[in-house]
Image 1 (cartoon, helix red, strand yellow):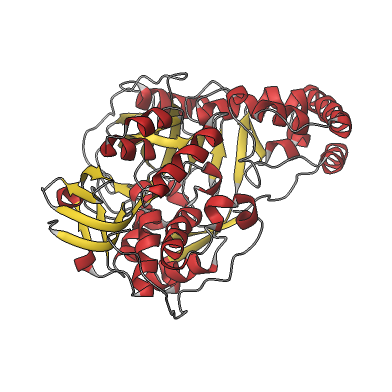
Image 2 (cartoon, rainbow, N blue to C red):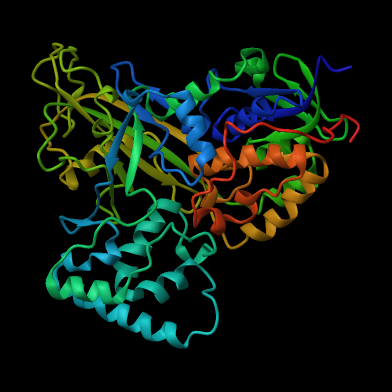
Amino acid sequence: MADINVDVLVIGAGPTGLGAAKRLNQINGPSWLLVDSAEKAGGLAGTDTTPEGFLYDVGGHVIFSHYKYFDDCIEEALPKEDDWFTHQRISYVRYKGLWVPYPFQNNISMLPKEDQVRCMNGLIDAALECRVANTKPKDFDEWILRNCGEGVADIFMRPYNYKVWAVPTTKMQCQWLGERVAAPNLKLVTENVVLNKVAGNWGPNATFKFPARDGTGGIWIAVANTLPKEKTRYGQKGTVEKVDADKKIVTLADGTTVQYGKLVSTMNVDQLVERMGNQELVSLSKGLFYSSTHVIGVGIRGERPERIGDKCWLYFPEDNCPFYRATIFSNYSPYNQPEAGKKLPTLYLANGQKAESTEAKEGPYWSIMLEVSESSMKPVEQEKILEQCIQGLINTEMIKPEDEIVSTYHRRFNHGYPTPSLEREGVLKDLLPKLLDQGIYSRGRFGSWRYEVGNQDHSFMLGVEAVDNIVNGAVELTLNYPDFVNSRKNEERRLAQSFAFGALPSHSK
């Protein structure tokens, strides 16, 4: 006999697991339990705080939603107006010492003349090629060439995407793209070049919300706090050691056994199948590729410089810095860094030299968060990456050599980005149904491994929709039809709805 019996066991208290638990709690039908190996909710959408009081998200997260249900749950968790700040996305690409407004491919009017000519020639060639092409692009690289041409490909798209994904664009497929990459409008680009104009904001997150306090992780702790405490287990008593899919029993690190009817797992699917001990699925999962992410934080004493201004996040395709993206995290909320009156010693100057004094002094302070990718094809020197990033900030004129650094942060996430590799769909179309046949719903950024539905809103709804499928057989739209959910505001499901159900899953199924 197992120690605990539930209809639905949810592994992981990141956005996907919390989405599943939230829906189960709302439905108030099947019995359920949520477990997570961390001491608090948030998963890959968590936030860390340095000893000095600087906050850093686990990568560049902002709230942009395709779903009313997601909005409802976030608003319930953080309902007050002063819980949030709303920002205009102010985003640039750093190229040849210039700040080129994002998206780069729509703003080649900002480039030096010789680069404008190179990009325009490529765009014209691409437009002519597209008119006669009768096959879909075979990979991401071909998609780039067909949409942007050689010039934009070589100057920005290829080097930038290699820095993000840590694999060449020739090793990635292109079904994932959708709204993720702006395809340039040749007429608009030509007009902007001739008139020397800038293209406006593009994309799904041209405006975004950010929590006033506790970073992105604070959102998910607040969502978790709306769930009954007795149905959640964190830390060692929530760590999954073994999954027996035949007996439908999960063993936790403290020895507790949990019998389940259905399992919603938001673990990395490659690690899930290892804990199942299923060699066929382990072999299958080895066809999935991922990159690791280093998140680097730098806290600086002084007023935010004029050259930084109200920039949000910035892209870096060139090789004069290891990071692909920088977020001015102090711009998102005044509570993301210590108050100006807090006294902190200078660790060292940006150029590595010792400060004149080790005495703690007052601020004000500002901060930058950087992201660096790593893979077997793009190794990173773990011990040197912080120093290399600070030098990269100097090289790109983000900071000055004499700036006083008062706090640093470095954390490596082994599973950072689920790569849309050429092999991905073949693996997922085999792996996910085989897990489902055993009553296991593997969902989430690394549970279902689909980057195109890997944002916080998507991840949350993957959990919600898995539960709806368990309870009443509803189609999981986000998992199966990413382009559809990304092309609209999905308003059919609301938190305030009430329910009537048919049969619930039993342990014997």
